Length: 197
Ligand SMILES: O=C(O)CCC(=O)C(=O)O
Ligand SMILES: [Mn+2]
Image (cartoon, helix red, strand yellow):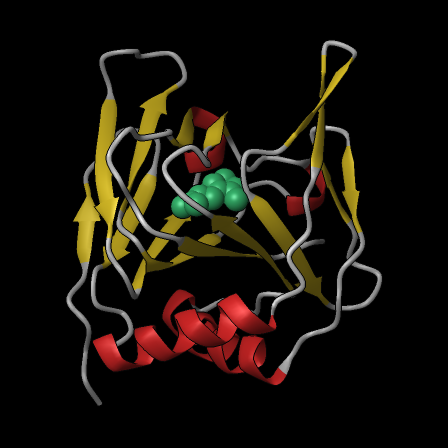
């Protein structure tokens, strides 16, 4: 079996690992196309300081029955696992040595779509969540910053077919985002696998 290249980032209070070529080019092309066309993409709404906005991306939530997830005032009830998502999940489970029971899919339609600074630390994710994040399609910048030590930052360009693993204390001590970009970029699909307790 092909062992994908693995890069470990040496960050204080965080464990971050990137597999830049987790899937081959051909696998990645076919997963992008299949996910793009078979997913029921929804427009989430965000409530901030009493005002409601469209999320700057489309999303879908799949998972085991009963594993609901809420963030920023949105409650997501999972759609069932599809054959496609189960096939992808098996590969991610093996790499992360975790049995994920849910996945959030994000579709960034262009450079105006984004995901603001946040951490994945909702109570239903438990103490030190393992977050496995797959990227397909256009390369976008992924930024991380330490919550207290503001000099500590990490910028990664997440390639087509890459897997990013965030484990340990990462979600308590660091935040991450996908900023908007003025560069012309195509569509990007991201899948973040999670364990809902
Ligand atoms: O699109 C990405 O790479 C990040 C997605 C993310 O952080 C999230 O959905 O919580
Ligand atoms: Mn996140």
